[in-house]
Image (cartoon, rainbow, N blue to C red; front, side, top):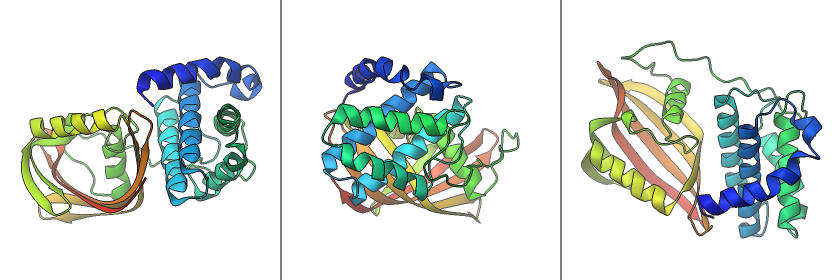
Length: 271
C-alpha cells in the first residue's frame, strides 16, 4: 500500500477508533495514535496476505512491526507499560488476530485496541511480559562510539538503518566497502545514498529486527555482526520476509563514528 493510500486508510478509521478507546488512550498524543493505527493496518494486512497468523513470515512481520512501534513511541516521548516486543506479547497479538481475518476492518479495530491498551499509561496485557528497559543513553561524545552491541544498535537505529526512522546518510563514511552476498564493491557516500533511495522506492515500508548481535574491536574498526529478521513491503502492498546476516565495520574519528564497511548476506526469503 502506498504512503498516500495508507494515510487515507488510517485517517478513515482512526476517528472511529479513538472514541471507543478514549479512556484507554488517555496520555497518548495524536501522532502516537496515528503510529499505532498505521501499525495495526500493516499487521492485519500482512496476516491477511499470508492467510494465517502462524506462518513464519507473519510471525516475523509481527515481531518487526512491534519493535518498530516501540521505538517510535519511545522516540516521541511515550512510555510503554511492559514490552510489546517480547515473544510472549507477540504471541498474544498473534492469537487475537488469527480469528479476525474474515473482516479486515474488525481486525484493524481490534489490533488498534490491543496496542492502545498496552501502550497507554496504566495499560496492561492479557499476558504481561517483563517491563521493557531501554539501554541507558550513550555518553555524549562527538568522536567515539562504545564498541558494545546495544550502543551500536541504538546508534544505527537513530540513523534509520532498521527502518524505524528516516534514513540519515551521515551514518556512512565518504568511502564504503559494500558487500552483498559475497560480491564486494567500493562505493562513495553518493553511491550509497542512491542505492538506499532506489531500494526505498521499491520497498517504501521496511522493518528490520536483530535476533542476535555481537560486537568486537578488529584493528581500528568496531565490527557489529548480526542476524536480522526483515519485513519489507512494496508500494502495491506485496510483502516479503527475509533473514539476513549483517556486518558493520565502524570507525570513530574527528567527524564522529562512520560506517566504513557493510556486508549483507541473505539467508532466507519468503513471500
